[in-house]
Amino acid sequence: QLAILVEAHIEHNQPIEPETLRLVEAWRHTNFMLSLYTLDGELLLQNPAAKNCYGNLSPSTKNNRCVFVDRFLDPAMGEQALACVTQGKIFSVETQVKTDKGLCWHKLDARRTHDPVTGNFIILVNEKDINDRKRAEEKLRESQCFLQKLINTVPQILYIFDLSDNKSLYLNQ
Image (cartoon, rainbow, N blue to C red):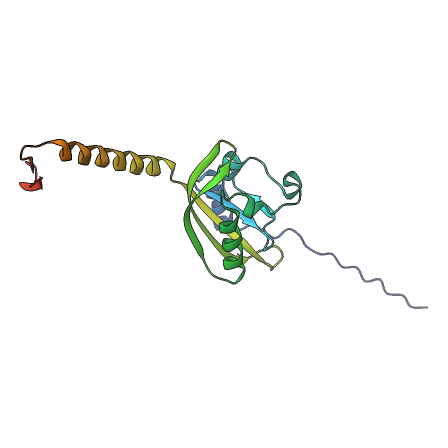
């Protein structure tokens, strides 16, 4: 009687490329908020900057609501972003989002990409906090408005000259 024993083992010890390890380290330490979502808007993963901004969210913590859409102050914009990205388009906007610390202005870019684990399409979201810039722009508008009101109340001729550029900036007549 003849018998043959065949045994096979699957090797799971594929070495991780040095570039991949470096990318993971950069992902962990960047100031940009990076998040991955399913095409249904369920959160898959977020880097520490995003966790610090939004908290440690998962679909179960949001009562089965779409986490991606729920981050936008304006849900219609979130739905528009989701629809745009699922069609393969890039969605880029400056908008207010709901963070753990309240409303905040973000420059947000979202795009569809492939999940390297499953091969399915996913959404990659890259966000930058632009709150300081938005506050500075608002203060500049307020200062310009105040200066214009001041200029309008001066009955005499007002001439503003920039000595550093040797340029006339304003003449109220």
